[in-house]
Image (cartoon, rainbow, N blue to C red; front, side, top):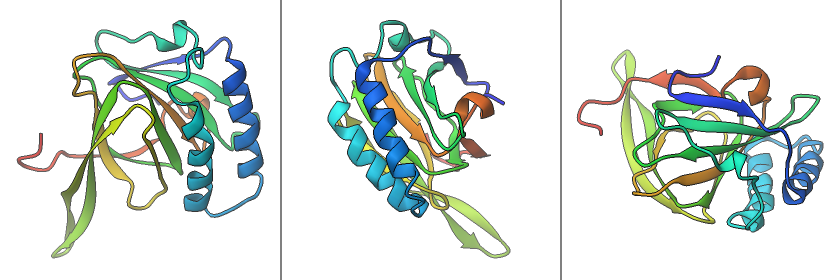
Length: 189
């Protein structure tokens, strides 16, 4: 199920660079490595294509006035990975969440702000604590795998931002890569 704060579309066509990226990711995924290492290697493949003109079609760069938009660029037939372009208009962002699988994100255009969190023991439960704020400019890549992948992303700049996301699951079928949504910690904004 797609979260309420995202618009999902499936791309009709991809560029040669995306097709080349798919082939490289396929080779890495078929190695059967641990999730963190897979994400790291996929990040190395993604970095060189970020910011390249013609990577995305004009339609894949379209945003939505109300919610960030996710354009699924590729879903591997065996559902082992998928690639999406996320388009963020100024001020748009996610809720605090973690993921179902390993993920790699790369900023293709603009800038994204990210707040990272940890769950810390608090008696018989746990509490969410922000531990890092990161500003990701064009070309920045982040690779991560559960557990420990709790974050919130938003476009804090005055212009549109576009990022490419590679997931170790089929987001076209699942509708999302989000596993859990967390309540925003008190005083967090």
